[in-house]
Amino acid sequence: MCPLVDSYGRKINYLRLSVTDRCNFRCMYCLPEDGIPKVDHHDILSYEELLLLACSVVPLGIEKIRVTGGEPLVRNGIVRFLSDLSKIPGLRQLVLTTNGALLEEMAQRLREAGVQRLNISLDSLRPDTFASITRCGRLEKVLAGIRAAEEAGFPIKINVVAMRGVNDEEIVDFAEWTLEKPYAVRFIEYMPTRGEEIWQSRVISGEAILARIKERFPLQPVVRGEMAGPSRDYKIPGAAGSIGVITPISGHFCEECNRIRVTSQGMAKNCLFADSETDLKPLLREGNVEKLQHFLKRVVIAKPGKHLISYGNNNHAPFDMSRVGG
Ligand code: SAM
Ligand code: SF4
Image (cartoon, rainbow, N blue to C red):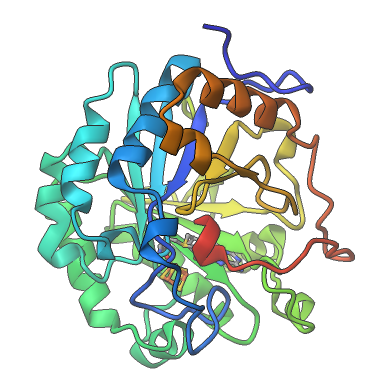
C-alpha cells in the first residue's frame, strides 16, 4: 500500500489519537474554568471505531500512535483499548500522554497493556502553583503517579508548559530535578490556542529557557534518536535525566513534521493550527476501510507546509486543546 507522504515530501508515520475531550483538570491554558459543553456520547468515536481507524492507518505507514485527550485515563475501558491497540501488527510504538492524576492506580496495568512510554504533564513542583494552573489538581497525587509509573518500568517524559509570571521561576528547579530523576523534562513554549489577548506576555522562548538553566548548570546536547520528536535535548553532565525545549512559536519544526491528529469526535487535522478538519466519523461508521484510507491520504496531501503562528502573529481560530489532544 502506498505510504502517507504529503505534497512537501514529508513521510507521515505518527498519529495522535484523542480518545476523549473530557478531563479531570481544567488547566488555565487548555480549558475554560467551567469546562466545555458536554459532547453527546454518540458523537464520540467508540473503541471499535477507534480500533478500526488504527488498523486502517498502520498499513498506510503509521508506526507510532500516541493516545491523548482530554485526559485519556478518565475514559472507561481505556486499558483494554490500549491492549487491543498494542496488538496491531506493524505498530512499532504505542505511547500515551496523561496529566498523571490516575497513574498511581493505573500505571502497572498500562504497562501490562503494552504502552511503551508515558508523557506526563507537570507544570509546577509547588503545590499552590500546581493547583492554580490546573484549577483542581493535586500535585502530591501526580507525583505519586509518576513514582508508580517509574516503578512499573516506564521511560518517562515530563511536559512543562513554560509561562512567564506563572511558573518561570521554577525552570531551574525542574532542571535540578533531572540530576536525580531519570526523566526527560521538556519545556514547551506556551501556544495561543485559545486566542487570549495576553498570550505574548506568557511566552518564554526555548532560547530564554536554556539561557536561564545555563546560568546555573552547564548543558551538553543529546544526540537525537530514531523517531525523535520535535524536542531539542540537553543534559547536565552526570545527570540521570535530560532537559529539552519544544519551540512551536520561536522555532518551527514544521519541516520535520511527521504527524496527523484525529480528535475524539473523529475529525482529522493535518496541522495543530489548521482551521479546517475532515470528518472521518461517517466512513468509520460505514466501516469502509478503503474509502477511509483514501480520505486519509487526501488529508495528508493537503497538509500545509508550515503553520504561520509566531510571536508576532496568531492567525488561527481559537480552539480547545483538550479536544485536539496537544
Ligand atoms: N490531559 C493530558 C495531559 O495534560 O497531558 C493529555 C492532553 S493535553 C491537551 C496534551 C498536552 O498539551 C499537555 O502536555 C498540555 O500541557 C499541552 N497543552 C495544552 N494547551 C497548551 C498550550 N496552550 N500551550 C502549550 N501546550 C499546551
Ligand atoms: Fe486536561 Fe490535559 Fe488540558 Fe490540562 S492540559 S485541562 S490535563 S486535557
